[in-house]
Image (cartoon, rainbow, N blue to C red):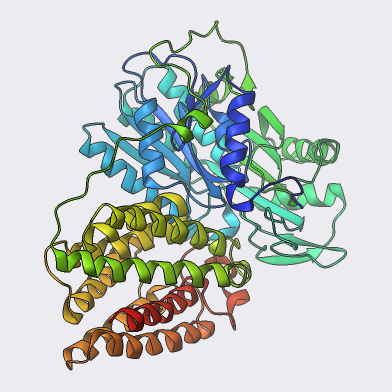
Length: 583
């Protein structure tokens, strides 16, 4: 378990601060993550990677010459926010455009996509690529739904080495696509991981058993088998991966492959070497030529006792890129000439960033009626913060049944930040719309992950509907909730029945619109809709997840409500209390 921490909510930030202090030769901190401390040639494509904390050396440990130009670092097991990614990418950009790379998880897809849109609006050409190498998370016919695990490294490295050669953005993207299409991973685990501050692991494995097909976010495996010997584990890993070859590889004999045997946290190096001796022998028996193998901790999951095997099937070009030199805090290969420091940017510590005094924010002009409504909005957000805080552990436990257990942590970080930002805006005389949009940005930024992106969208949709000029009536609020419902479905792609927060948001929005349409006052209409939301959340226990990290473990989630749906129902009821106090 994770034993050394202060405030669990601050763990990721403090870990990043310590990392940058220890590795100033390679990296410098910027808002949202780190970038290279060395100069990048003008016009070179910047490869910016990222994901949640808890996976070191992914992602910050892979920043340096020959590999990433920057890394956006999210909260524990949660994607970085679009704002963090945009900040890191802007700092890393050297004039050749930016390739954003990440593992294929819903939150990362949302936030990196939004960051690419913001970069384009700034005039910076940007592309995105999601690594999807975990063959246990979806079949070959649905490979686009697969998770990104230890295959991140060879795909990141191929793209970054191509960028170092001066290739333009579109060609660097094509290299990433080629490497991704030829990379496969598969893993096993003997125990789950424990998040900072938690008193139990996210999942357990019975004695003398192992979990098969695990992820890197504390998700349980897709099945269990008897505990193997080291040689038996090696055989399972190799044989599983050899059953699925890239489309243009008919037979493994005569092929070359980059091989990674990855430790997920608690399996130590000597154990990995015992397994690798058999992996190497089995691949040799199959006629595979191993090229520059890597054995060690490369993509971890805190203290998870597990291992994974990755094969990247090489052609001449991919082999050249795999063998290319790299110099980062956690991954080094070959030799590079002495690095030139980035003298154009003065070094800055994370602590200095945190204590810097920002310019006084300016809020748009608002009517007196909207300012009064902003007080109700602030009270509602205070109620949201309190109910999330009271139920954070419960939300984490629900999420851990088939997911990664971080929903409570993310919701707490997001709601707290949203309330703080709303209070600041209200104190400056902002109207209801501005208070909500400031809260939206803060929630998305601090929570990260899928829930951060979706709650940012909900609050922003409400803020846009309410505006700063008029006193929002019940019909306008209902309109804002309806728009939020549509925006969440468009952004996340989920629909009713997928076992997500949409299963609550849609019936809540419909019930609120119907009740206000009947002429009910807002508090009464909200009460009716909140009752609908509570029933809808309970009903998700009978659904099988069709999206998100819980999808590969669908059967495990039967009988348990969706964490996002449950938290939304709790919030709708808490907001009703605030409306009663301020109607």
